[in-house]
Image (cartoon, rainbow, N blue to C red):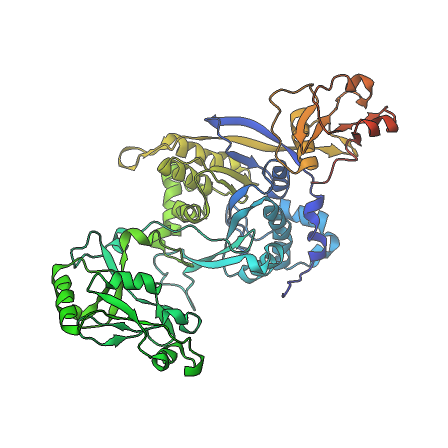
Length: 576
Protein backbone atom coordinates (compact mmCIF):
# COMPACT_ATOMS: atom_id res chain seq x y z
CA UNK A 1 0.00 0.00 0.00
CA UNK A 2 1.41 3.44 -0.88
CA UNK A 3 2.38 5.43 2.20
CA UNK A 4 2.68 9.20 2.32
CA UNK A 5 5.82 10.76 3.77
CA UNK A 6 6.37 14.39 4.76
CA UNK A 7 8.65 16.54 6.89
CA UNK A 8 7.99 15.82 10.55
CA UNK A 9 6.04 12.59 10.08
CA UNK A 10 8.47 10.59 12.22
CA UNK A 11 7.76 12.97 15.10
CA UNK A 12 3.96 12.69 14.99
CA UNK A 13 3.10 9.07 14.08
CA UNK A 14 3.15 8.08 17.75
CA UNK A 15 2.70 11.52 19.29
CA UNK A 16 -0.85 10.73 20.41
CA UNK A 17 0.68 8.38 22.98
CA UNK A 18 2.61 11.24 24.57
CA UNK A 19 -0.30 13.68 24.73
CA UNK A 20 -1.27 14.15 28.39
CA UNK A 21 -4.71 13.07 29.49
CA UNK A 22 -6.41 15.96 31.27
CA UNK A 23 -9.37 16.27 33.55
CA UNK A 24 -12.52 17.44 31.80
CA UNK A 25 -13.90 20.10 34.14
CA UNK A 26 -17.59 20.87 33.84
CA UNK A 27 -18.24 24.57 34.24
CA UNK A 28 -22.03 24.53 33.85
CA UNK A 29 -25.02 22.51 32.68
CA UNK A 30 -27.58 24.00 30.31
CA UNK A 31 -31.04 22.55 29.83
CA UNK A 32 -31.74 19.02 30.99
CA UNK A 33 -29.15 16.68 32.48
CA UNK A 34 -28.34 14.93 29.18
CA UNK A 35 -24.86 13.55 28.52
CA UNK A 36 -24.22 15.99 25.66
CA UNK A 37 -20.88 17.78 25.96
CA UNK A 38 -19.25 20.89 24.52
CA UNK A 39 -15.54 20.95 25.33
CA UNK A 40 -13.46 24.12 25.00
CA UNK A 41 -9.83 23.38 24.32
CA UNK A 42 -7.22 21.94 21.99
CA UNK A 43 -8.92 19.01 20.32
CA UNK A 44 -5.76 16.87 20.45
CA UNK A 45 -5.74 17.00 24.25
CA UNK A 46 -9.54 16.87 24.42
CA UNK A 47 -9.67 13.71 22.31
CA UNK A 48 -7.04 12.09 24.52
CA UNK A 49 -8.99 13.13 27.60
CA UNK A 50 -12.21 11.65 26.23
CA UNK A 51 -10.70 8.17 25.98
CA UNK A 52 -11.52 7.11 29.57
CA UNK A 53 -15.24 7.57 28.98
CA UNK A 54 -15.59 7.13 25.20
CA UNK A 55 -12.92 4.85 23.69
CA UNK A 56 -14.60 2.50 21.21
CA UNK A 57 -18.05 3.95 21.91
CA UNK A 58 -18.54 6.69 19.29
CA UNK A 59 -20.84 5.47 16.53
CA UNK A 60 -20.49 8.46 14.19
CA UNK A 61 -17.73 11.04 13.85
CA UNK A 62 -18.11 14.09 11.64
CA UNK A 63 -15.27 16.58 11.36
CA UNK A 64 -14.79 19.68 9.24
CA UNK A 65 -11.06 20.38 9.74
CA UNK A 66 -9.16 23.33 8.28
CA UNK A 67 -8.97 22.97 4.50
CA UNK A 68 -5.50 24.57 4.39
CA UNK A 69 -6.49 27.03 1.68
CA UNK A 70 -4.15 29.80 2.83
CA UNK A 71 -7.09 32.13 3.47
CA UNK A 72 -6.37 34.14 6.63
CA UNK A 73 -9.58 36.18 6.86
CA UNK A 74 -11.75 33.59 8.52
CA UNK A 75 -12.67 33.40 12.18
CA UNK A 76 -11.25 29.88 12.12
CA UNK A 77 -7.77 30.58 10.73
CA UNK A 78 -7.32 27.59 8.45
CA UNK A 79 -3.86 28.14 6.96
CA UNK A 80 -2.15 26.49 9.93
CA UNK A 81 -0.51 29.74 11.07
CA UNK A 82 -2.65 29.86 14.20
CA UNK A 83 -0.12 30.65 16.96
CA UNK A 84 -1.34 27.78 19.13
CA UNK A 85 -0.82 25.28 16.30
CA UNK A 86 2.56 26.84 15.47
CA UNK A 87 3.60 26.55 19.13
CA UNK A 88 2.55 22.91 19.20
CA UNK A 89 4.46 22.14 16.00
CA UNK A 90 7.55 23.79 17.43
CA UNK A 91 7.35 21.71 20.59
CA UNK A 92 6.63 18.39 18.91
CA UNK A 93 8.57 18.56 15.64
CA UNK A 94 11.36 20.94 16.61
CA UNK A 95 13.69 22.80 14.25
CA UNK A 96 12.55 20.73 11.26
CA UNK A 97 9.34 22.74 11.37
CA UNK A 98 11.18 25.89 10.25
CA UNK A 99 11.26 24.50 6.70
CA UNK A 100 7.68 23.23 6.61
CA UNK A 101 5.38 23.82 3.73
CA UNK A 102 1.81 24.42 4.78
CA UNK A 103 0.98 20.89 3.59
CA UNK A 104 3.59 19.40 5.95
CA UNK A 105 2.17 21.47 8.82
CA UNK A 106 -1.37 20.38 8.01
CA UNK A 107 -0.42 16.71 7.94
CA UNK A 108 1.47 17.02 11.23
CA UNK A 109 -1.61 18.62 12.76
CA UNK A 110 -4.08 16.05 11.42
CA UNK A 111 -2.23 12.76 11.88
CA UNK A 112 -2.27 12.41 15.70
CA UNK A 113 -5.84 13.68 15.85
CA UNK A 114 -6.97 11.01 13.40
CA UNK A 115 -5.15 8.37 15.45
CA UNK A 116 -7.17 9.35 18.51
CA UNK A 117 -10.41 9.54 16.54
CA UNK A 118 -9.74 5.99 15.35
CA UNK A 119 -9.46 4.89 18.99
CA UNK A 120 -12.74 6.58 19.91
CA UNK A 121 -14.70 5.09 17.01
CA UNK A 122 -16.82 2.03 17.77
CA UNK A 123 -16.41 -1.23 15.85
CA UNK A 124 -19.68 -0.53 14.00
CA UNK A 125 -18.94 3.16 13.52
CA UNK A 126 -17.86 5.43 10.68
CA UNK A 127 -16.06 8.76 10.34
CA UNK A 128 -17.04 11.47 7.84
CA UNK A 129 -14.39 14.10 7.02
CA UNK A 130 -15.20 17.22 5.02
CA UNK A 131 -12.35 18.47 2.83
CA UNK A 132 -11.71 20.25 -0.46
CA UNK A 133 -9.17 19.67 -3.21
CA UNK A 134 -6.26 21.29 -1.33
CA UNK A 135 -5.66 18.30 0.96
CA UNK A 136 -8.03 15.62 -0.36
CA UNK A 137 -5.39 13.25 -1.67
CA UNK A 138 -3.04 13.71 1.26
CA UNK A 139 -5.95 13.04 3.60
CA UNK A 140 -6.94 9.91 1.68
CA UNK A 141 -3.45 8.45 2.02
CA UNK A 142 -3.11 9.06 5.77
CA UNK A 143 -6.62 7.72 6.38
CA UNK A 144 -5.69 4.58 4.44
CA UNK A 145 -2.72 4.27 6.78
CA UNK A 146 -4.62 4.91 10.02
CA UNK A 147 -8.01 3.30 9.36
CA UNK A 148 -6.88 0.79 6.73
CA UNK A 149 -7.50 0.89 2.98
CA UNK A 150 -10.07 -1.89 3.40
CA UNK A 151 -12.10 0.45 5.61
CA UNK A 152 -12.47 3.12 2.96
CA UNK A 153 -16.20 3.51 2.32
CA UNK A 154 -16.65 6.43 -0.08
CA UNK A 155 -15.52 9.79 -1.37
CA UNK A 156 -18.79 11.72 -1.31
CA UNK A 157 -19.13 14.77 -3.54
CA UNK A 158 -21.27 17.39 -1.83
CA UNK A 159 -22.70 20.04 -4.15
CA UNK A 160 -21.92 23.00 -1.94
CA UNK A 161 -23.31 25.74 -4.20
CA UNK A 162 -26.50 26.17 -6.18
CA UNK A 163 -25.08 28.64 -8.70
CA UNK A 164 -21.67 29.34 -10.19
CA UNK A 165 -19.97 32.71 -9.88
CA UNK A 166 -19.76 34.84 -13.02
CA UNK A 167 -16.18 35.80 -12.23
CA UNK A 168 -15.00 32.19 -11.84
CA UNK A 169 -11.94 31.23 -13.83
CA UNK A 170 -10.91 27.86 -15.20
CA UNK A 171 -12.98 24.85 -14.14
CA UNK A 172 -15.49 26.01 -11.57
CA UNK A 173 -15.45 24.09 -8.29
CA UNK A 174 -19.01 23.13 -7.36
CA UNK A 175 -18.32 20.31 -4.89
CA UNK A 176 -16.48 19.61 -1.69
CA UNK A 177 -15.61 16.12 -0.57
CA UNK A 178 -16.56 13.99 2.41
CA UNK A 179 -14.21 11.05 2.93
CA UNK A 180 -15.88 8.17 4.76
CA UNK A 181 -14.03 5.42 6.63
CA UNK A 182 -15.29 2.71 8.94
CA UNK A 183 -13.63 1.13 11.96
CA UNK A 184 -14.03 -2.36 10.48
CA UNK A 185 -14.34 -3.49 6.85
CA UNK A 186 -17.82 -4.15 5.51
CA UNK A 187 -19.63 -1.23 7.15
CA UNK A 188 -23.02 -0.58 5.57
CA UNK A 189 -24.89 2.74 5.69
CA UNK A 190 -28.55 2.91 6.56
CA UNK A 191 -31.01 3.46 3.74
CA UNK A 192 -32.51 6.90 3.20
CA UNK A 193 -36.25 7.53 3.35
CA UNK A 194 -38.11 7.40 0.07
CA UNK A 195 -39.50 10.58 -1.43
CA UNK A 196 -42.95 11.17 -2.88
CA UNK A 197 -41.33 11.53 -6.30
CA UNK A 198 -39.80 8.08 -5.97
CA UNK A 199 -43.07 6.54 -4.83
CA UNK A 200 -44.92 8.16 -7.73
CA UNK A 201 -43.16 5.75 -10.10
CA UNK A 202 -45.14 2.89 -8.58
CA UNK A 203 -48.49 2.43 -10.34
CA UNK A 204 -51.35 -0.04 -10.29
CA UNK A 205 -52.42 -0.58 -13.94
CA UNK A 206 -53.92 -4.02 -13.25
CA UNK A 207 -55.92 -3.07 -10.13
CA UNK A 208 -53.59 -5.07 -7.89
CA UNK A 209 -53.89 -4.82 -4.12
CA UNK A 210 -50.88 -2.46 -3.90
CA UNK A 211 -48.77 -0.27 -6.20
CA UNK A 212 -45.88 -1.79 -8.14
CA UNK A 213 -43.29 -1.02 -10.77
CA UNK A 214 -41.93 -3.14 -13.58
CA UNK A 215 -38.57 -4.83 -12.95
CA UNK A 216 -36.26 -7.16 -14.81
CA UNK A 217 -37.21 -10.82 -14.39
CA UNK A 218 -33.54 -11.84 -14.69
CA UNK A 219 -30.45 -11.68 -12.50
CA UNK A 220 -26.77 -11.80 -13.52
CA UNK A 221 -24.60 -14.91 -13.31
CA UNK A 222 -26.21 -17.50 -15.57
CA UNK A 223 -23.07 -19.67 -15.78
CA UNK A 224 -22.92 -19.91 -11.98
CA UNK A 225 -26.66 -20.57 -11.52
CA UNK A 226 -27.39 -23.05 -14.30
CA UNK A 227 -30.31 -24.64 -12.44
CA UNK A 228 -32.07 -21.28 -12.78
CA UNK A 229 -31.55 -21.11 -16.56
CA UNK A 230 -34.43 -22.79 -18.40
CA UNK A 231 -37.33 -22.09 -20.76
CA UNK A 232 -40.73 -20.69 -19.78
CA UNK A 233 -43.56 -21.21 -22.25
CA UNK A 234 -45.60 -18.09 -22.99
CA UNK A 235 -49.30 -18.80 -22.16
CA UNK A 236 -50.67 -16.58 -24.94
CA UNK A 237 -48.21 -17.17 -27.79
CA UNK A 238 -46.76 -20.58 -26.89
CA UNK A 239 -43.22 -19.29 -27.48
CA UNK A 240 -40.34 -20.57 -25.30
CA UNK A 241 -38.76 -17.68 -23.41
CA UNK A 242 -35.24 -17.76 -21.93
CA UNK A 243 -33.27 -15.28 -19.84
CA UNK A 244 -31.01 -12.96 -21.79
CA UNK A 245 -27.45 -14.20 -22.38
CA UNK A 246 -25.41 -14.46 -19.20
CA UNK A 247 -28.41 -14.16 -16.85
CA UNK A 248 -30.88 -16.41 -15.02
CA UNK A 249 -34.43 -16.15 -13.67
CA UNK A 250 -34.60 -13.97 -10.57
CA UNK A 251 -36.34 -16.58 -8.39
CA UNK A 252 -35.96 -20.30 -7.83
CA UNK A 253 -37.81 -22.63 -10.18
CA UNK A 254 -40.42 -23.84 -7.71
CA UNK A 255 -41.37 -20.24 -6.85
CA UNK A 256 -41.55 -19.26 -10.53
CA UNK A 257 -43.73 -22.30 -11.26
CA UNK A 258 -46.10 -21.30 -8.47
CA UNK A 259 -46.32 -17.72 -9.81
CA UNK A 260 -47.01 -18.81 -13.39
CA UNK A 261 -49.80 -21.12 -12.25
CA UNK A 262 -51.66 -17.91 -11.55
CA UNK A 263 -52.06 -17.51 -15.34
CA UNK A 264 -52.97 -21.09 -16.21
CA UNK A 265 -51.85 -24.63 -15.45
CA UNK A 266 -48.07 -25.19 -15.77
CA UNK A 267 -45.77 -28.14 -15.16
CA UNK A 268 -42.08 -29.02 -15.21
CA UNK A 269 -40.90 -31.00 -18.23
CA UNK A 270 -37.53 -31.86 -19.75
CA UNK A 271 -37.65 -30.56 -23.33
CA UNK A 272 -34.08 -31.48 -24.26
CA UNK A 273 -32.92 -27.90 -24.69
CA UNK A 274 -29.39 -28.21 -23.24
CA UNK A 275 -27.88 -26.51 -26.26
CA UNK A 276 -30.17 -23.46 -25.94
CA UNK A 277 -29.50 -23.30 -22.22
CA UNK A 278 -25.73 -23.52 -22.82
CA UNK A 279 -25.95 -20.51 -25.15
CA UNK A 280 -27.69 -18.49 -22.43
CA UNK A 281 -25.10 -19.55 -19.83
CA UNK A 282 -22.23 -18.81 -22.21
CA UNK A 283 -20.67 -22.26 -21.85
CA UNK A 284 -20.12 -25.18 -24.28
CA UNK A 285 -23.09 -27.54 -24.61
CA UNK A 286 -21.18 -30.39 -22.97
CA UNK A 287 -20.52 -28.23 -19.89
CA UNK A 288 -24.08 -27.10 -19.16
CA UNK A 289 -25.97 -28.72 -16.31
CA UNK A 290 -28.06 -31.45 -17.95
CA UNK A 291 -31.71 -32.25 -17.39
CA UNK A 292 -32.95 -28.92 -16.03
CA UNK A 293 -36.67 -29.00 -16.89
CA UNK A 294 -38.56 -26.16 -18.51
CA UNK A 295 -41.76 -24.63 -17.15
CA UNK A 296 -44.31 -25.45 -19.84
CA UNK A 297 -48.08 -25.40 -20.32
CA UNK A 298 -49.81 -28.38 -18.70
CA UNK A 299 -52.67 -28.21 -21.24
CA UNK A 300 -52.77 -27.47 -24.99
CA UNK A 301 -52.15 -23.87 -26.07
CA UNK A 302 -55.79 -23.01 -26.88
CA UNK A 303 -57.28 -23.63 -23.41
CA UNK A 304 -54.15 -22.23 -21.78
CA UNK A 305 -54.46 -19.06 -23.86
CA UNK A 306 -58.13 -18.70 -22.93
CA UNK A 307 -57.37 -19.00 -19.20
CA UNK A 308 -54.49 -16.54 -19.42
CA UNK A 309 -56.58 -14.06 -21.43
CA UNK A 310 -59.18 -13.98 -18.67
CA UNK A 311 -56.49 -13.14 -16.11
CA UNK A 312 -55.09 -10.46 -18.41
CA UNK A 313 -58.52 -8.80 -18.75
CA UNK A 314 -59.51 -9.29 -15.11
CA UNK A 315 -56.38 -7.67 -13.68
CA UNK A 316 -54.37 -8.44 -10.54
CA UNK A 317 -51.82 -10.23 -12.70
CA UNK A 318 -49.36 -12.63 -11.11
CA UNK A 319 -45.94 -11.31 -10.09
CA UNK A 320 -44.40 -12.47 -13.39
CA UNK A 321 -46.46 -10.82 -16.11
CA UNK A 322 -46.34 -10.44 -19.91
CA UNK A 323 -45.78 -7.07 -21.58
CA UNK A 324 -47.37 -5.51 -24.69
CA UNK A 325 -50.91 -6.40 -23.63
CA UNK A 326 -49.90 -10.01 -23.09
CA UNK A 327 -47.99 -10.44 -26.35
CA UNK A 328 -44.47 -9.44 -25.24
CA UNK A 329 -41.79 -10.81 -22.92
CA UNK A 330 -41.78 -11.46 -19.19
CA UNK A 331 -41.32 -8.74 -16.58
CA UNK A 332 -41.50 -8.87 -12.81
CA UNK A 333 -43.59 -6.78 -10.42
CA UNK A 334 -41.73 -5.07 -7.59
CA UNK A 335 -44.15 -3.86 -4.94
CA UNK A 336 -43.66 -0.53 -3.21
CA UNK A 337 -43.92 -1.98 0.28
CA UNK A 338 -41.05 -4.40 -0.46
CA UNK A 339 -38.40 -1.97 -1.66
CA UNK A 340 -37.60 -0.29 1.65
CA UNK A 341 -35.40 2.79 1.76
CA UNK A 342 -32.99 4.17 -0.79
CA UNK A 343 -29.27 3.34 -0.68
CA UNK A 344 -27.22 6.53 -0.35
CA UNK A 345 -24.92 7.43 -3.23
CA UNK A 346 -21.63 9.32 -3.34
CA UNK A 347 -23.26 12.41 -4.90
CA UNK A 348 -25.15 14.63 -2.47
CA UNK A 349 -27.13 17.36 -4.22
CA UNK A 350 -27.64 20.74 -2.57
CA UNK A 351 -31.43 20.45 -2.83
CA UNK A 352 -31.28 17.46 -0.47
CA UNK A 353 -28.36 18.36 1.80
CA UNK A 354 -28.14 22.15 1.72
CA UNK A 355 -25.49 24.52 0.42
CA UNK A 356 -23.13 27.15 1.78
CA UNK A 357 -25.55 30.04 1.28
CA UNK A 358 -28.22 28.16 3.23
CA UNK A 359 -25.72 27.58 6.04
CA UNK A 360 -24.90 31.30 6.26
CA UNK A 361 -28.60 32.17 6.39
CA UNK A 362 -29.05 29.68 9.23
CA UNK A 363 -26.36 31.45 11.25
CA UNK A 364 -27.92 34.84 10.56
CA UNK A 365 -31.31 33.56 11.67
CA UNK A 366 -29.86 32.07 14.85
CA UNK A 367 -27.88 35.18 15.81
CA UNK A 368 -30.35 37.96 15.01
CA UNK A 369 -28.79 38.85 11.68
CA UNK A 370 -25.17 38.84 12.89
CA UNK A 371 -22.61 36.93 10.83
CA UNK A 372 -20.75 35.36 13.75
CA UNK A 373 -19.15 32.59 11.69
CA UNK A 374 -18.03 32.71 8.07
CA UNK A 375 -17.81 29.06 7.00
CA UNK A 376 -20.57 26.96 8.60
CA UNK A 377 -21.92 23.77 7.12
CA UNK A 378 -25.69 23.50 6.53
CA UNK A 379 -27.58 21.53 9.14
CA UNK A 380 -29.14 19.36 6.45
CA UNK A 381 -25.70 18.08 5.46
CA UNK A 382 -24.97 16.76 8.95
CA UNK A 383 -28.52 15.44 9.24
CA UNK A 384 -27.84 13.33 6.14
CA UNK A 385 -24.73 11.92 7.85
CA UNK A 386 -26.80 11.07 10.93
CA UNK A 387 -29.50 9.44 8.78
CA UNK A 388 -27.11 6.91 7.30
CA UNK A 389 -24.68 6.42 10.20
CA UNK A 390 -26.59 6.49 13.51
CA UNK A 391 -29.29 4.76 15.48
CA UNK A 392 -31.59 6.65 17.81
CA UNK A 393 -29.20 6.13 20.75
CA UNK A 394 -25.85 6.69 19.03
CA UNK A 395 -22.99 8.81 20.33
CA UNK A 396 -21.84 11.46 17.81
CA UNK A 397 -18.52 13.32 17.96
CA UNK A 398 -17.34 16.48 16.20
CA UNK A 399 -13.86 17.60 17.25
CA UNK A 400 -13.70 20.62 14.89
CA UNK A 401 -17.04 21.94 16.07
CA UNK A 402 -16.92 25.46 14.65
CA UNK A 403 -20.34 27.08 14.91
CA UNK A 404 -21.99 23.95 16.34
CA UNK A 405 -23.90 22.63 13.32
CA UNK A 406 -23.45 19.05 14.49
CA UNK A 407 -25.16 19.78 17.82
CA UNK A 408 -28.13 21.31 16.01
CA UNK A 409 -28.35 18.33 13.64
CA UNK A 410 -28.36 15.87 16.56
CA UNK A 411 -30.98 17.85 18.48
CA UNK A 412 -33.15 18.12 15.35
CA UNK A 413 -32.90 14.38 14.72
CA UNK A 414 -33.91 13.56 18.30
CA UNK A 415 -36.84 15.98 18.16
CA UNK A 416 -37.97 14.42 14.90
CA UNK A 417 -37.90 10.74 15.89
CA UNK A 418 -37.87 10.82 19.70
CA UNK A 419 -34.30 9.51 19.76
CA UNK A 420 -31.63 9.85 22.41
CA UNK A 421 -28.56 10.52 20.30
CA UNK A 422 -25.82 12.26 22.26
CA UNK A 423 -23.21 14.67 20.95
CA UNK A 424 -19.71 15.65 21.99
CA UNK A 425 -18.34 18.84 20.43
CA UNK A 426 -14.79 20.11 20.80
CA UNK A 427 -13.75 23.63 19.81
CA UNK A 428 -10.32 25.20 20.29
CA UNK A 429 -11.18 28.84 19.71
CA UNK A 430 -12.59 31.31 22.20
CA UNK A 431 -15.95 31.36 20.42
CA UNK A 432 -16.64 27.90 21.84
CA UNK A 433 -18.80 29.72 24.40
CA UNK A 434 -20.06 32.72 22.45
CA UNK A 435 -20.92 30.86 19.20
CA UNK A 436 -20.77 27.05 19.54
CA UNK A 437 -22.50 26.83 22.91
CA UNK A 438 -24.74 29.85 22.33
CA UNK A 439 -26.07 28.40 19.08
CA UNK A 440 -26.83 25.14 20.85
CA UNK A 441 -28.68 26.96 23.62
CA UNK A 442 -30.88 28.78 21.10
CA UNK A 443 -31.68 25.57 19.24
CA UNK A 444 -32.71 23.96 22.54
CA UNK A 445 -34.93 26.83 23.70
CA UNK A 446 -36.12 28.15 20.31
CA UNK A 447 -35.16 31.24 18.33
CA UNK A 448 -36.53 33.80 15.88
CA UNK A 449 -39.82 35.68 15.84
CA UNK A 450 -43.03 35.65 13.84
CA UNK A 451 -42.76 33.71 10.60
CA UNK A 452 -39.10 33.03 11.31
CA UNK A 453 -39.74 31.54 14.74
CA UNK A 454 -38.26 28.09 15.38
CA UNK A 455 -39.55 25.99 18.24
CA UNK A 456 -36.96 24.65 20.65
CA UNK A 457 -35.87 21.03 20.36
CA UNK A 458 -35.40 20.55 24.07
CA UNK A 459 -32.37 18.76 25.48
CA UNK A 460 -29.29 20.08 27.17
CA UNK A 461 -25.51 19.91 27.39
CA UNK A 462 -22.64 20.31 29.79
CA UNK A 463 -19.92 22.86 29.01
CA UNK A 464 -16.40 21.69 29.83
CA UNK A 465 -12.94 23.18 29.98
CA UNK A 466 -9.72 21.19 29.74
CA UNK A 467 -8.27 20.95 33.21
CA UNK A 468 -4.88 19.87 34.49
CA UNK A 469 -3.06 16.67 33.42
CA UNK A 470 -3.66 13.76 35.78
CA UNK A 471 0.03 13.44 36.51
CA UNK A 472 2.83 16.00 36.77
CA UNK A 473 6.48 15.48 37.71
CA UNK A 474 5.96 11.77 38.29
CA UNK A 475 3.25 12.38 40.88
CA UNK A 476 -0.52 12.68 40.99
CA UNK A 477 -1.41 16.24 40.09
CA UNK A 478 -3.01 17.75 43.23
CA UNK A 479 -5.19 19.97 41.03
CA UNK A 480 -7.05 16.92 39.67
CA UNK A 481 -10.26 15.93 41.46
CA UNK A 482 -10.47 12.52 43.09
CA UNK A 483 -13.56 11.63 41.03
CA UNK A 484 -11.69 12.32 37.79
CA UNK A 485 -8.68 10.34 39.01
CA UNK A 486 -10.90 7.37 39.88
CA UNK A 487 -12.43 7.42 36.40
CA UNK A 488 -8.98 7.59 34.80
CA UNK A 489 -7.39 4.78 36.83
CA UNK A 490 -10.36 2.45 36.30
CA UNK A 491 -10.27 2.99 32.55
CA UNK A 492 -6.48 2.68 32.32
CA UNK A 493 -6.64 -0.67 34.13
CA UNK A 494 -9.79 -2.16 32.56
CA UNK A 495 -10.23 -0.27 29.24
CA UNK A 496 -13.91 0.14 30.08
CA UNK A 497 -15.83 3.29 31.10
CA UNK A 498 -16.08 3.89 34.82
CA UNK A 499 -19.47 3.49 36.48
CA UNK A 500 -19.43 4.44 40.16
CA UNK A 501 -20.41 1.41 42.26
CA UNK A 502 -23.91 1.56 43.72
CA UNK A 503 -22.77 0.20 47.08
CA UNK A 504 -19.06 0.86 47.67
CA UNK A 505 -17.60 -1.16 50.52
CA UNK A 506 -15.20 1.70 51.33
CA UNK A 507 -14.41 5.14 49.88
CA UNK A 508 -11.60 3.73 47.72
CA UNK A 509 -13.53 0.93 46.00
CA UNK A 510 -13.78 1.32 42.19
CA UNK A 511 -15.63 -1.84 41.21
CA UNK A 512 -15.16 -5.45 40.09
CA UNK A 513 -13.95 -6.42 36.63
CA UNK A 514 -13.58 -10.06 35.55
CA UNK A 515 -13.63 -11.20 39.16
CA UNK A 516 -10.96 -8.71 40.29
CA UNK A 517 -11.86 -5.94 42.75
CA UNK A 518 -10.08 -2.64 42.10
CA UNK A 519 -9.25 0.03 44.66
CA UNK A 520 -7.63 3.45 44.39
CA UNK A 521 -6.26 4.46 47.78
CA UNK A 522 -5.14 8.07 47.35
CA UNK A 523 -4.78 10.83 49.92
CA UNK A 524 -4.08 14.33 48.56
CA UNK A 525 -2.17 15.51 51.64
CA UNK A 526 0.07 12.48 52.30
CA UNK A 527 1.27 9.22 50.78
CA UNK A 528 -1.45 6.57 51.13
CA UNK A 529 0.02 3.26 52.33
CA UNK A 530 -1.48 -0.16 51.65
CA UNK A 531 -1.38 -1.87 55.07
CA UNK A 532 -3.42 -4.06 57.42
CA UNK A 533 -5.57 -1.13 58.47
CA UNK A 534 -6.62 -0.51 54.87
CA UNK A 535 -7.32 -4.21 54.26
CA UNK A 536 -9.66 -4.25 57.24
CA UNK A 537 -11.96 -1.83 55.38
CA UNK A 538 -12.46 -4.16 52.38
CA UNK A 539 -15.83 -5.94 52.34
CA UNK A 540 -16.17 -7.11 48.74
CA UNK A 541 -15.45 -10.82 48.12
CA UNK A 542 -13.49 -11.33 44.88
CA UNK A 543 -11.10 -13.73 43.19
CA UNK A 544 -8.34 -11.16 43.52
CA UNK A 545 -7.62 -7.57 44.46
CA UNK A 546 -5.69 -4.84 42.65
CA UNK A 547 -4.95 -1.88 44.90
CA UNK A 548 -3.39 1.37 43.68
CA UNK A 549 -1.60 3.33 46.39
CA UNK A 550 1.56 5.36 46.94
CA UNK A 551 3.27 2.79 49.22
CA UNK A 552 2.86 -0.81 50.37
CA UNK A 553 3.66 -2.17 53.85
CA UNK A 554 2.35 -5.72 53.28
CA UNK A 555 4.50 -8.82 53.07
CA UNK A 556 4.89 -10.22 49.55
CA UNK A 557 4.03 -13.77 50.62
CA UNK A 558 0.93 -12.54 52.42
CA UNK A 559 -0.23 -10.73 49.30
CA UNK A 560 0.43 -13.80 47.15
CA UNK A 561 -1.66 -16.03 49.41
CA UNK A 562 -4.54 -13.58 49.43
CA UNK A 563 -4.36 -12.71 45.71
CA UNK A 564 -3.52 -9.05 46.34
CA UNK A 565 -1.62 -7.00 43.74
CA UNK A 566 -0.13 -3.67 44.75
CA UNK A 567 0.32 -1.03 42.05
CA UNK A 568 2.16 2.17 42.75
CA UNK A 569 0.42 5.30 41.57
CA UNK A 570 1.26 6.84 39.17
CA UNK A 571 4.16 4.56 38.15
CA UNK A 572 2.04 1.45 37.56
CA UNK A 573 -1.01 3.11 36.02
CA UNK A 574 -1.19 1.78 32.43
CA UNK A 575 -0.75 4.31 29.64
CA UNK A 576 -3.89 5.61 28.00
